[in-house]
Length: 377
Image (cartoon, rainbow, N blue to C red; front, side, top):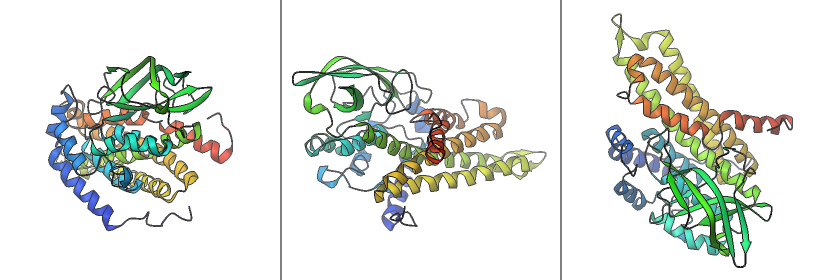
């Protein structure tokens, strides 16, 4: 960690990005829009997506040579934090994770082939890591790739793929010649929309039923070690989004505690309310520091420290967001259990994100194995 700046590398550019993103999302993604899109067949606003692409967000971390902004993980964490704050329904996360996989595992020709379309927003892409068995381990892949001449034949199923029903390009792992391999598949698969617990994050199940793809569909550097790093970097990005959602949840609960009165007193003046909210605030700050620390380590190329930091960030963010929404529902009283209360959107996002890319127990088991030796993680 010696090469990681003590201030995580913050600069005026980071502040500009965060402030601009917050203003844009407050205007384009009010809670009324969230409610509308929750019942929308598409699940996101294509017009807003086009504006986001024009702002350069779709290619935020994609190298400039491929049409992106060439910014770092800290920029990505700040942007995702603002998106999580507004519960933005968007294909953004899936595309960002797919681009990350292509950048880390693809060769120069493969990057030049796929990254420009993602950076411009013209190609909706996603990452398919889970299978119906539901394992979070990067090595637990059942889908297979069989070579036949100059092609690969893909078979298997990928579940809970973000915006998978609309994706024109999906990066996913398969077992090829007994080893983990990553493939960037441009269509041809069968996509079935799933019923997600979180209406602001649409997912799909993708079926590869003997799909033949060209040889260069296989990403040249997509081995198990690279795949593990991709998943941990993705978990760190997701943790940033969760921190934003947790802070927004705390804000909603705080405002209600100020407005709501019992026995002619604001309920926020009661110790049973204000002390848990302070605990939430402290937890959010701790989780945010884990997220920024992991992002700074990835930017500094400190892979081991970054991967450890990513696990710590995802574990902490999972606990913090779950606790914040639990307090939010509880302190809103009976109103908090109704669909009229905005809190239920954050509650559902928390349930989805807690399981996405590994829950807190999963990551802490791996951290324990790192500290104390193999514990069966």
